[in-house]
Image 1: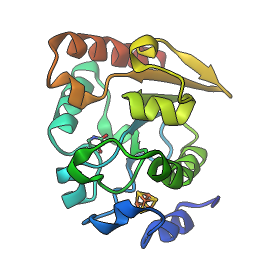
Image 2: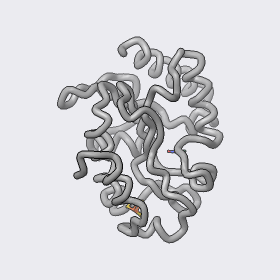
Image 3: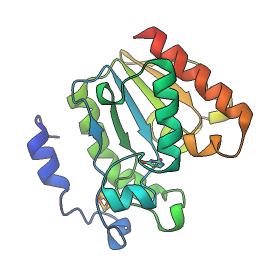
Length: 181
Ligand code: URA
Ligand code: SF4
């Protein structure tokens, strides 16, 4: 663990801890306010994120931005990161050894940001942060407190592209986040 961002960033620059290093264009470390009250955690970079080196800049990110705008959440005020920092081939779910290998970077980011609230975007984020036994269908929309941090599990924004009901639930979950801060 590093107690400052420079050393943490330096430690990841050439990471080859898992096979996802083989096809990446850019490591998507994370982006936003390093002093944020709210942190968002996704699954892993897609094609647009891999190309730009930034999280949630593709289609799913645009949907998330629309919800942010509607709810008065300023994207620059929050911190956004992913379970794995390199793009899985064909956007598949990261394998457990890949997630496990990458998770220490994310843990270190959480320690440095010290958020009050963490929004878990989808099953991969929920399971790797709060427990493999948890189901996103059962947990979404319900606050979970652990070691002083309030977690809100919700749908991954990519799931909204396929399902109108999920859009409404995602909106309500983020509304509850915006109201709590
Ligand atoms: N999906 C994710 O889980 N993370 C991103 O950064 C983009 C899409
Ligand atoms: Fe390293 Fe994480 Fe990329 Fe794997 S996904 S190579 S652990 S930065």
